[in-house]
Length: 129
Image (cartoon, rainbow, N blue to C red; front, side, top):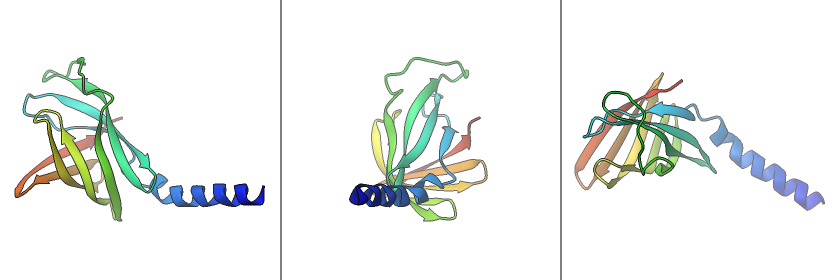
């Protein structure tokens, strides 16, 4: 029993830093190449953060059906302090491309940057309420 309690306490202690991350929550993506946007839910994934597309909108802001809803599009983002995240991956549905990524949060804005070789792409997301 003592071992079980110690194991549970250790698991909680390891999870606490990720739970305190300011980036957790819902973010509206920048328009993609097709003008579509989405809402991404960013959550703690052990000691990192990840994000799943939970809603999709067309260029007019109307909810739309998308096979990408429910798909993880951010993973392995390591908190680096002061709203910075690094060494993660991001998948861009409009280009069906996965990028090495980093993120920088400033207030209610999140700059998501991804690179493949020397080709980089930045997008500014805003906190969704």
